[in-house]
Length: 485
Image (cartoon, rainbow, N blue to C red; front, side, top):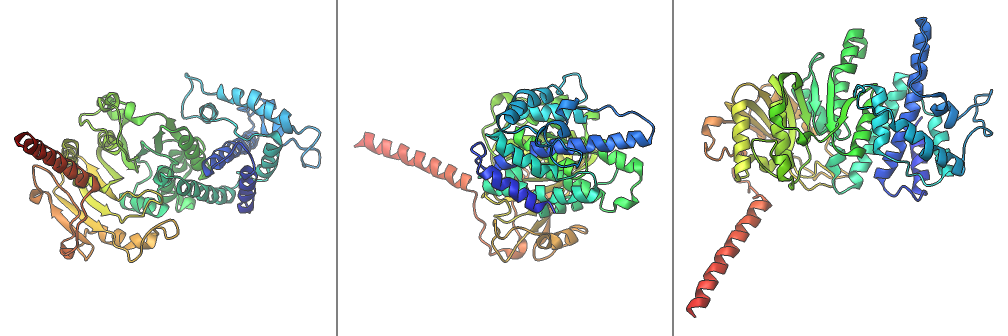
């Protein structure tokens, strides 16, 4: 029902000078969808209050409600063209009145987990990029036909929105920044197996894929859940942090569409927090994450961590270990070079992980899992509180190359899920005792003993470092020869 509506919106934005990329399409669609969702939510709350004999106090003032400015209706419930703003009048209202009004809900004294605060935060982080009010009027009319009242409506919209996020991720160079393949997330959630009552956290939540899939997993049999269990899932289960404005907004919208009314996502730089300040009250039962990869973190941020490194993902891993409760469980995607790098930070971090946690499973993924990102990754599954004695490895070997047109699917990961339950050995899986690991380097390289003739490709960074050292040695030799001559 809504698929054609999304396509029509994209076609309209494609012709608009203010929206140039797939990222712009998602951003602009998101703020309009959010306001329509908010209107439906308010009407639902009003009905519930009336049935309970209470008066409902609207969040938004009358002039800023959807039916006043976006799509005022006549007695026939059709758009009242005499009252509906258009052209410059509509643009002036949105940019000069609506957005400044909505921004004010971001009150420093307000509860950051309320829908009111989310309104203020979202509209403090974006702007209307749609260049003309005529274009905006067309989009508003389409969105007015979408509804968020019924579970089935939200379900369909959530699937379509996920598809838009996927397209946005594939469109950019850093695909994994916005979109972690859902089959991989679902598999990680299955292995970690969260339970209702446990708190679930992603400190680099992006579009909130991990939190959404954990919610789907816990509500798979929704009919059997009690009202108190649903309240726990709504308010006391899912927590996230995200530094980038667009990802934050998409994450909020994604969770809302999946049925979480006021997502507990904070727009904040997770790495700016000194991990020594984390107290027991700040900890979570489960961490699910795919932290961003990349070097270049400055010294000021590195001071917040005992193991200093410019690699973003390694700082996040320290944060995740610290913020887990004793007995807490984690499933974290990270570059496969973490297992073998010989620099001091990598060695120290592997040692920390093995000593503080039970790293019971490593899933080795093939290249191409993340469309547009040529990074090979592994998934670390661990439980905090006791040292690692044995690591079970599974090397995902596929008979095809992965890419945008040939993505990872759940069937690809079915054997891993099955074998992981008992940590069984197979052609693709094996165990490694930590006592047999080099105690100086703690090297955990993926070396499948059943494929001993397989050529293990060296990490390009290590190759470049060796070339640099050889060039230096050659230069010193030539310098000595020059002096002799």
